[in-house]
Image (cartoon, rainbow, N blue to C red; front, side, top):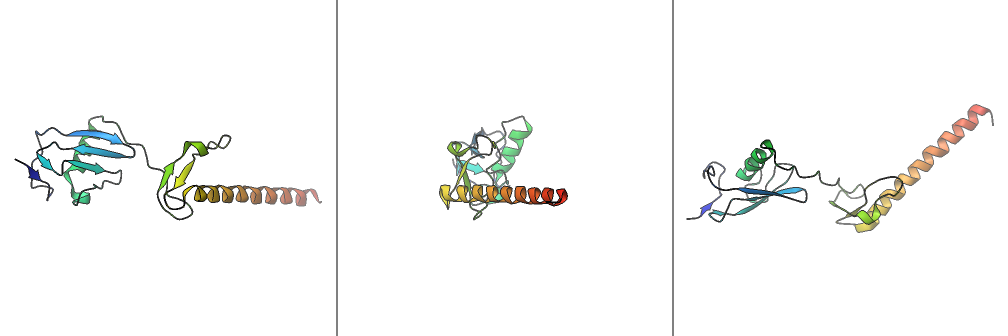
Length: 141
């Protein structure tokens, strides 16, 4: 017998084996072979990959898993500051001295990372020049 998840309260999942694993920034919920869809991916915004989205029982399964001391998924990377698209960690571009995390944009790739980094450098130079000119003004130069 296979159950199909079509409504949150329609199927009682109590007593059924449910396995949860952390995959990247999400939780993979396995309700077992007797439930379709069997696998659900729940993100940290409490939304499921299935058609039920926010009303999926997998979300409550993850909440219970976390209440019982389960491993937390890491926070996802912030969106691209250039275009707002999703970013992916890239350790090759970690800042040696700044300790900033390296990343690549899913839309603009490495180019967006380098554009954002160049903007931060330009802003730091502007702040430094402003501080120097204020110091020179105060010294009467």
